[in-house]
Amino acid sequence: MRRRGTAAAAFAAGATGLVGLAVAVWPHGVHGYVSESGVPGTARADLYLLSIVLIAVAAALLAGALWPVCRQAGALLLAAAPAIGLSGAVTCTDGCPLPPYDPTTAQDLLHAGASIAGVGFSALAMLAVAWWPTGRLRPIARAGVAVAWPVLVATAACMVFVGRSGVTGVLERLGLLACVAWMLATAVAIAVDPPRPG
Image (tube, rainbow, N blue to C red; front, side, top):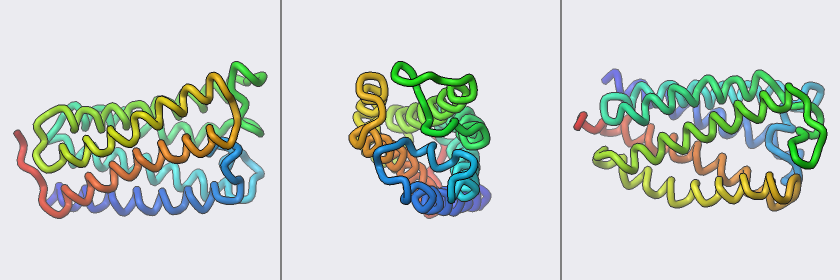
């Protein structure tokens, strides 16, 4: 029952955070980075921060629900949670400048590093569930890997070789959506019928 409750809470936090993030990011279109919605002074910066914190909480809760089934994934999500939270707490500066195309501040680099770590650990957790014998959770993770990993790799390549663009913005949003969608689907599966530890 405890794992079901933890998974249900992870779903509630993650779903609320995802909806809030979509609302916060929507006015900015797709030609900028998602993080630009959190720059202080923008219309929905507070909603952006709250949404990121909720997604971080969802990652931490899902880590607890996954731990008995796949400790590797649980540990990776536990690492992802504070990184995700830090990426919201430390915002980028206006325009979210990133190398090699823009002059970048230490604040921008810290924000970018935390964002990369949060997404990276989440993607690795997904891979861990897909790799280890986790019963019904494995197909969900394999589908997530098949969708998220190519998009995340393409996003990273576009950030380095293209910079800010509509293509980069769309890929970034799709990659984030795929990661959070995997978390939500996994949380639902555990809440409905928690798999037994292997």
